[in-house]
Each structure stands twice: as C-alpha cells, then as structure tokens.
Length: 207
Image 1 (spheres, rainbow, N blue to C red):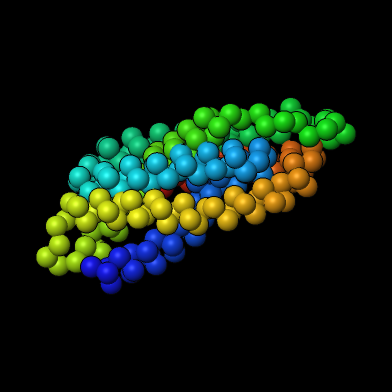
Image 2: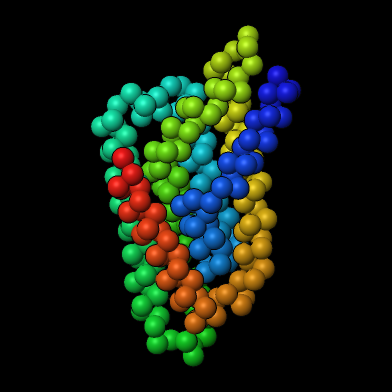
C-alpha cells in the first residue's frame, strides 16, 4: 500500500503541474486581485478535484465513458463557462482601456466568486472526469478494499494539487504589485481572457 501511495503522489504532482483552464483562472485571480482571492480560486478548484475523485470512487464518472450524450453535455457546458469567463475578462480589459494613468483598482472579485470560478472551471471539465476514472483505479493495490482506497486517493489527489498551487499563488502575489499596475493589469486581463476563450473553443470542438 505504501508503494502505491508514493507512486500515486508522484503521479498526482505531475498532473497538477500540467497547465490547463484551472491554472489560468487561479493565476488570473492571484495576479489581478491578490493572494487571498487566488487562494479562494484554488480552494474551489480542489473541491472540484475532490468531487471528480469521489465520482470516480462511486462509479459516477464512468457514465462519461458509457454515454456520449452525458460527455457532450458536460463538454459543451464547460466550453460555455470558459468562453463566458474569457469574454468577461476581455470586456473588463476594454473598459479599462483609457485608465492607465489612474491608480490600480481594488479587488473587484469577492472571495466567494473566486471560489465558485475555481470550482466551476474544474467541475465543468469532462476530461477531468475521464482522467479520474481511468487514473485512480490504477493505483489500487491487489487485495485492497476498492472503495475506501479510492476515497483516500481522492483526498490525497486534492491535497497534492493544493500543495502545488500554494507556491504558485504566493509567487503570483509576490509580483502582483507590479502586475496590478493599470496598464499591466489590462494586458493580463486580455491575455487570460483570450486563453480562456481559446480553451473553451477547443473544448467545444474536441469531441
């Protein structure tokens, strides 16, 4: 069991390091609105990770493998969410277009909203569900109780993901004073918005 746990932790770290929609949302919130808001997005993301892990443990995410309709519904929903978030970021950047000489605006996103952004971004990604149902069972040692082991791995997965994002948010907050200057902040909004829209379109067309 200990060998399986260590192997799982190593694999979970590699997964956490791979950039995706959640990374974009967390970095955006950390840079634009500060570390506390970034951490709220991280906590939302980890709840999404935990939900997918629990779904895999109870066999719910296996529906995504068995039903193309279920997969498509979640895929299109996730794409709409990403495009909406990206379009909103681009709109906010445009509104700030002539405000480079003004002082940096205070955090405009509440902790609750940042949390929900992190949660929805992760939960609306069907690939996370497919990954969970195909990834977690591989580390269950022979003879172990499957359900309790998968539940434990789900929690470990969320904790490992959290550990990875802690320094990411800290570093983003460290340079946030410079990056939150009006002109730089507007550029960050433009970049993150374009990336989110691109990821949403890719998810929509990637059947």
